[in-house]
Amino acid sequence: MYKRHYRNITTKPRVVFRALGDVNGDKVPEVVFLTGVITSDSPFVQQITLVVKDGKTGMVFNVPLSENAGYNPRLFLGDFNGDGIDDILISIDSGGSGGIMYHYIYSFINNIPNLMFDFNEYNKQYNYGVNFKNNFKVEALSSENEEKYIIDISLKGQDYLGEIYEGNGRLREPIEGFVNPLSGLYPVDFDSNGVYELLAYQKIAGRYNADSLGYFLNSLRWSEDKFKLFNQNIAIWGAETEDNRW
Image 1 (cartoon, rainbow, N blue to C red):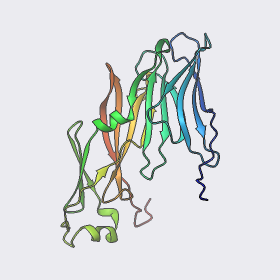
Image 2 (cartoon, one colour):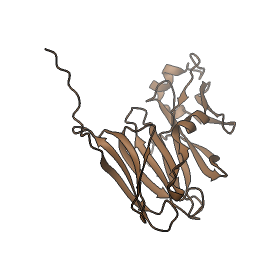
Image 3 (spheres, one colour):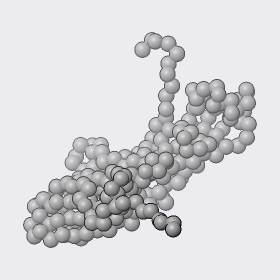
Image 4 (cartoon, rainbow, N blue to C red):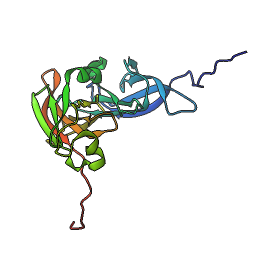
């Protein structure tokens, strides 16, 4: 008789990450947890939940997450909106080949969770176009700020370039690339004033995901009631030098 096999998981949630900080504004540090159900033979974590234990009263608050399964769930506590009180950054690795990550930021003033950042909303808002051009160039377009960038791929090597270009540098056929969803969100205090900004990474890919051309780097700052883009760059890959001058 056929017997179906399931992964062995522990049904009781366990603490998978813990941090300490005043997140509700009462000047008493809270214990902030991520809990989850751990697979016994894998680092995969399911049912990941944000849990805050009030440092003054001992009351416990649970906040479910819309994407609550993945790898290496972790927390960072820091002030993102300038009110002098720690906010809660949650990061979870999806585990997929694209390196996509799940990120949320909550404020927790008066023990009320308020979602400040949702990676799904970010991915909907930030749209891009990637088009290969003649003469070993790739055009990358960012719709959010209507900026255009030109990436020089002439250092990619003859085997790579020969598949895409004729000998005169003309494209063999039109090629569109793409930009991955959010693959990294890092707290950075750019101006050293105690309030953190966000540095968001999104990979630029060519014909397929492993054909990496660089990254969009978006710097976001809290303004009024949301995170807004205030700086954008593209980072590209280099190539080895042909001599030992350096």
